[in-house]
Image (cartoon, rainbow, N blue to C red; front, side, top):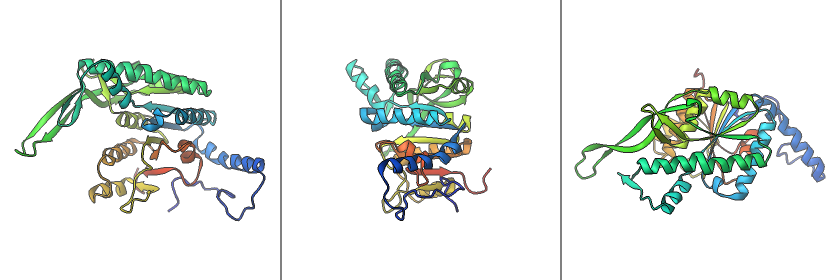
Length: 319
């Protein structure tokens, strides 16, 4: 089966050891020309990037990310950036002397905490990313799920089991939600105006209150509603690994489910892969888990045949 990343037209000279070494300017020009078919492939296509992890906290990586996003925008893509900010929220809570509460190992977002979450996510972090993108020529605008009623969420609860009594109980996580409705009109208008929306995962609940949303889940819901060509998850790992610890370049939804069932995909990778599966089933053409600590990982994924992480697509024959 042809790789979902490869184009129909062959890409001569790329990583070809038989091509003699050329002067640097000539080689640079050749590499630029090789990118053209990929730029044409994604022209006018929607690409959602979930930005987070160490890539967001490193100045050099942040600057490189901003330049790459600006370049992708110039190539004609409709880009949406969704960001997280867990470490920054925790740091601000500490500075303000607000002690975090935990239930069954899960952070509870109470009224004081959600005020800080909104201030940090929709405020300082969001505007910092916008400023960095604009400095690179990206023409970005900051939004959150509340704007234009873009995202409405339902309250999240978790069920845990006491290891001693084996009794299940429902854990109230406070103001934590998951998307129930996504209205893409605002994003359509912003991208249609040539801007890059940078979206914080804060949204209004069905009860009219403010809720924090897991950034991966938020990005997946947005990408699904937009039927995005690609959803890219920038993480701190290379992608999905096999039993020998080697990167798996491509998986179908069926493959991913089987690897969760047999334990190859485990731990914190399970919810991330499940989010990828949900996004594909909601209409995203392909979802990629890639290492945001690798410079220019977004360009490597979209503009090369080998990609830069694990691409998850629908099963063959699935509609």
